[in-house]
Amino acid sequence: MLDRLQRYFDSLPLSPEKKRIFNLPNTITLVRISFVPVLFLLLLSPDRTMSLIIAALFIAVSFTDMLDGYVARRYGIVTTLGKFLDPIADKLVINTAMILMIPIGRIPAWVVAVIVIRDFAVDGIRNIASSEGYVIQASWLGKQKTLCQVFAVSALMIHYPFLGADAHVVGTTILFIALILSVYSGLDYLEKFYRHILLKKEERHD
Image 1 (cartoon, helix red, strand yellow):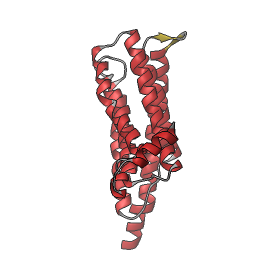
Image 2: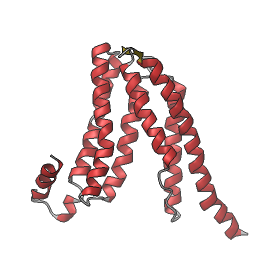
Image 3: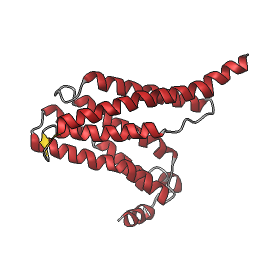
């Protein structure tokens, strides 16, 4: 199926420059972003069935995070736009989902605040480091934190007992694991920023 889709995009009468924008991996990423309006259904305090449907859609959309990267590497379509859109799509979908569950009492507001502020801080640190010529790669801790967030948000969306388990309790437990990883990985990024940027600047001034 992927090969068929890729052949379709290859057949489009577009210039090479436009194909670096309108291609299969970028389209997959944009589909992920387009899911955000669906998340506003959470504000309706959905019942058991609707909660399960929203959670299933969220899990499917989260899976595309791995898919677009795989497609980009498989077909050699790694682009600057794709590198820019992919992390934005991840944070937009996950953070929007968490924020929208605050009013319906499915997630603690302070936990969401800590995670969102951490994300903004890390993005700022990485952007400053990049402007100084040093690229801080996404860490293993950061990836585990995102994975935990996906599991936590999915369970919190389900909310009601599911397959013999209390989805809300399961989601809350995983959420606090994600919180710990979020803070720890944020400090890891900060340490790398200090060691490779701030410390070297101080040494040059000395």
